[in-house]
Image 1 (cartoon, helix red, strand yellow):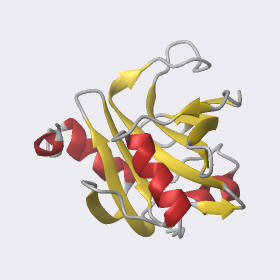
Image 2: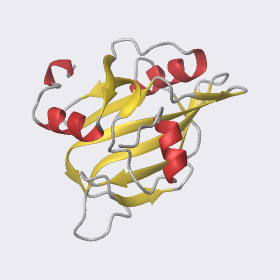
Image 3: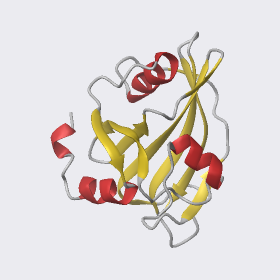
Length: 166
């Protein structure tokens, strides 16, 4: 079974056309849990170049969802999203996302680079910016350690993360 060190390396190695459904040997934190999504990131994923931090995030959808670009009759179960953070200006910019089904089969990608936007205080994005820009572990994040995306998805859908919903 292939092991990867970080989501960033996995995304680069697979060109975002195959999902890292294998065990991810990394330090994952759940950043956000609500009734629609569970968001997690690898503490090893940030890359800082000058004042710009780049982070990959896994967003697991509570129920299969139709997202733009997914073929007719198909749904996305989770997405891998790359976001850049401007550490000096307190802004973020989504670079791209890729959608996958539960089996890790690539469904679609969104390569549209979004405009820079402000980061809301106390948001998931603020936690990601702090991690990327200063290496700060997410406050209030739930450590997962080594995970399988499929297992986290099954646990989330079974309600095992509901205690973390604010």
